[in-house]
Image (cartoon, helix red, strand yellow):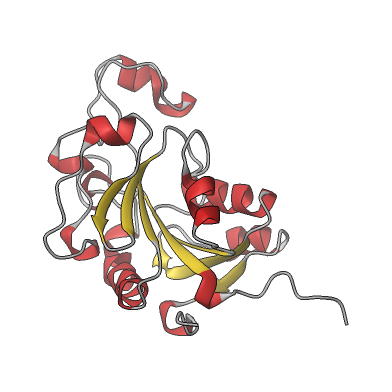
Length: 211
C-alpha cells in the first residue's frame, strides 16, 4: 500500500485564518457568507488556541492611492478607494477571533513583512496578494515550528484561501480546508481542490491537535 501523504497530521498542524476583517464581514465590501461563518471560525480558532498550536491571522490592507495592489483592485485603490485601509475599523480582525487582551494591529510592522504576536503562538501576518505565501515569511515560520499540515479557513474560497492551498501543496504541506469556517464554498470549488489532494473537514471533524 503506498504511503499516505495526504491525511492531516493534526499534532503538527497550524491554522491559517485568511482575510477575516471587518470590511469583508459586514463593512464596506462584505463578502457573502463571511458573517454567517464567523461563529464556526471562532470555534475553530478556539480549538487551535486551546491546543497551543500555531495560528496565523493573515490580513490584507490597501492604503488609498497606492500601486502595489492586486490587479483586480488596483485601479480603484489608485483612485483613492478605502478598503481595509491600514488603521481603520474596517481593517481590524473581528474580536471574536482574537485572544483576550490582543493588541491593535501594528500596520507599519505588518506591512514591512514582519509577524506581529497577538498571543501565545498566535500571530498576525500581512500578505500583499492572494496567497498567504506570496512575499511573506509564512513558509519559514511554519518550517521553523515543524508544521507539516496547513489548516485553512476564512474569506473567501475562490480567491485567497484557494491560492494559499495551491501554494501550500506546491511546498509539500498536507492541506485541509475547513468548509463551515470558510465563505463562498461550493461543490464545484471543493471538487477542484480535491484534485490536488486538499482534504475537507468541518470544525467538528478536526482531529486531536495534541501529540
